[in-house]
Amino acid sequence: MLLSYTITPAACYSRPRTSSYKHLPPCPPPPATVLRFHTLYREKLTYLRNLGIADLNTKSTNIRSHETLDQILSIIDYLKSKGFLDSDIPELASDCPKLFSSGLEPADVEPVFRFLATEVRASTPESRGLVLCCPELLFSNVEYCLKPTLAFLTSIGLEKLNSPTNLNAHLLNTRVGKLEAKIEFLMSIGFTYEESIKACVRLPAIFGYSIENNMWPKVEYLLDGMQRSIEEVKEFPQYFAFSLRGRIVPRYMHLKQRSVHISLKRMLLCGDDKFYAKWK
Image 1 (cartoon, helix red, strand yellow):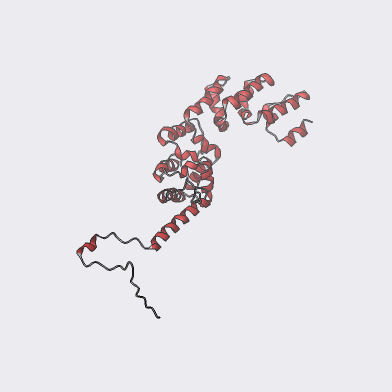
Image 2 (spheres, rainbow, N blue to C red):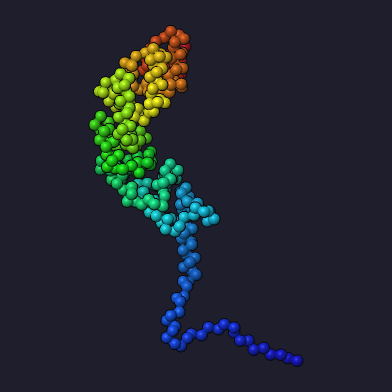
């Protein structure tokens, strides 16, 4: 026997004919919009990951929000407006991760770039170079830290601080108290104030040396080990720039065994080949 079936839809939707239609919840956005949102998010995350900033692993507990990514990208865009390249970002991210933290905005670092341009008189490429040498510069307070340091350095006669060297970048980021401590140390071992200033201008790297681990041991060896005078260091402050164990002690012992006495400058300045060939 032939059977027939009548199929009745279980949930056919028909538009209401009453004014209550306007109270229905809005329709969800088209799926394409949602897909595009996720695509943009992934593109941004991939870009930042390639720069060494963000982790693309979406299962990570440290996953960035869409707003956070935009904020980090705004920092990158700002840095690019200051002459930085994509290739600079990984180095900055490695040396100074907080530069790309979610709480930082371009306005937070703008005063430092303005200081470099107007006070230090650094060009855009020079400012970029100084920041690459010392990214922590961007987190120094201009009024209370950078300006006093610049004023001190220029007052003792240091020039061309706009040159993008590692030394200049770290000098600018050194607090005045730490700079003054090196002058006070030199005075404590027999330098006058003027001699201390002159030594620091001749060898500005002194400002970055540790008194306890670098300068004082060399003074002790000069006085007790080599039986020399502080006057020799006044004439050759570069003495502090050489390694105590790697250069000063070996060369002094080599000369002592041969009963040779020469100035610190002659003892330390030339390369190993020339030194050991001359004093066989």
